Structure formats: C-alpha cells, structure tokens
Image (spheres, rainbow, N blue to C red):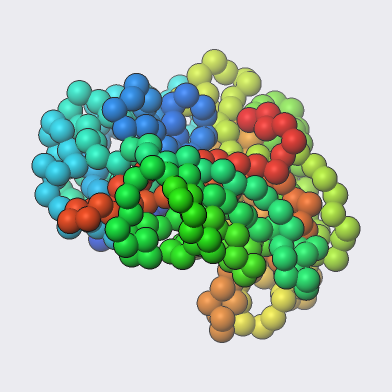
Length: 425
C-alpha cells in the first residue's frame, strides 16, 4: 500500500513541469504539459469524429483545460492539408472566409475541485473563421498570438460530398490471419469525370479514429462505369485486436468499475485501478466498449466540464516484458494513441510488473496496453491484448480528389461503419 501511495504522489506532483515542444506538426498533439483533456468532435454527437459537411449548419466542438489556471491569451488558426496531412501550400484566401486567426474568448474557471484549472471552448465554423473548401484541416492553438509558442494542434475534416461509399467488414482472406484480422471492402459510387484515377483520387481507411492505423488506397481492384471497387485480397487488413479495457470514475465518492482505491486530500485526488493481466493467451470474451473513446463525467456535481476532478490514475499490468528492447505504453483516444513520457510504463523485472500513473479528468475511459519494439519501430497491442476477428471495431473511410488543374485535394466522401450489431453510442 505504501508503494502505491508513493508512486501516485510522485507522478501527480511532477507531471506539469516538463518543457514544451516549439514547432507545430500536423497531427493531434499537446505541446505544453499544463494542457489536458483536449476534446474535438462534431457537436451533434459527443466524441464523434470531428467531421462536418461543407456549407452546412454542423459545428466542430473543441475544448481543453489549462491546469495552471488563470486566464491566458490563447489564439487559433486553421490550415488546409493534403490527404496525408502535409500542409497544402495554398493561400488562406483559397480555403478561408473571414479572418485567418482569432482569440479564444470562451473560458470558465473550475469550481469545487482540489486542482484548479481553466476550461476553454471553441466552435467552428464561427463568425470570424470559416473554411470554404472541403479537405483535411489542422487547428492550431498558440499563446499570445505567437505561432512560435504552440499549445495544441488538432485534426478535423470538412466534407464536400460528391460520392457515395458502400462498405463491409469481413474476415481477412489470408488463411493465416482469418482468426485475428478484419478486412474492409468498399465501393465508391461517383458521377464525376476522373482524368487520372491513380494520381487524382485516394481513399484512406482508419480503425477506431486512430490515425496510426491509416491505410491509403490509390488503386482500385476493379473500375466500372461510375464505380470503383476496392476489394483486393491483400489490402485493408487490420488486426482485430481485443475489446478495450475500461474504468469508471464518474463518482469519486464510490468505487466505480475497475477502481480499487481512491485516495483524496485537500490538494489532490489519486485513483488506483485493479491490477490487469495480459489477455493474449485467452479466448475471446465479448464485452461492450467504446472503441477506445472516453467521456468526461462527474455525477457528484452539475457541470462535467468545470466540476470534474483531475486524478492521478495508477495502472498496473502483471506481465513479463515481451523482449528486452522495448517499452510498454497505455493508449486510447484520451491520448490519441500516441507515445509520451506520461503514458510510458515503468517495469519492475523482479515482480514482472509494469506500472504508470497518468493524470486524467474524471469520467469514463477505454484503454489498452501496447508494446513499442525499439528494433522494428512498431507499436502493437498484440503482446498484451491479443487479436481476434470477433472484436467490435469501427472503421472510417475518407475519399480525396484533386480536380484537373487544382492546387489542393478535396475531401469528397466519408463514411463510418461498425461491426457492432447495434451502435449504442
């Protein structure tokens, strides 16, 4: 017990004093350690993918917390990107109406929390900043109007619908992978004239909103009149992985799902989860999850955004290291499946135990354990979680087109599909 408390206190007291990165990248990233809980989704459905239709009434909801509290001078801009998230080297006049930047003025202070913070919100498009063409966009937040002081970069999508996409999820057609992988077949139905199919049109497939799973399709298996079929035997195969693990901290008065202990004083709140075991040697067990998602909730208060508490959450995995040259991480949509010092796990070789403490905002969380192999430079959950074709996953398909003579790629189609019989989200 003393070891657990010592770990919790050490991590919770050191997590917001690291140095920041100084250069923007076109990916979902937080650059300052005091910035937490970045949310970005279509406002019509909480934690949906941030996709909106061009010239429609839909909005992107974006928010974050600053654990240093007070009021900061945060500014933002948006930039158009290519299908592979490179900057589209075009003028802001080509893709923006209104201004090219503005200050975030919607903020509120936390109340009734041990750790004080300031909550910021933004809605796009708005009266100041409005995208006027379809495509990938990167939202950049920076301090004091100075882009050399990055705070957050966040991807979102604007669809100029011109095609229809029909898709299905099946077993992998590779015999060796049929029990572990899922395959996506899809058809693009269109009425536009495509001059150079293999250069001007791309289709990107993601699993569970995770950009690191992206597979880019440039060559359909069959070309028919007004129809492109992507069902090649060897493409768009994804590890099925396993159902995500989860924990519930909606209330800090009672122990929710997977919560072992709650430690609370006037200055901090810490939560220890039950120790996890590897699932790579087990048979598949079906359970409902949120495909890696998370939801900010506080049933002890009235306002989820400003009354939810920040907690140090202790994760423990009882498993031997898969090899001697790698590291274990805790990943989920709460950290965009990225690797950082905060979600890297320490390893006790004597106990064969991994552990880490991650600062999270009160709510419901999906997570999994992944292993980064330093030799192959690959990140996989298989060593700890296993992989099964029965796992329920969601897949997103994006279609991009560059018109003849155009200087940018337009997002002309999007669909989201799931092998869950009833999507209750």
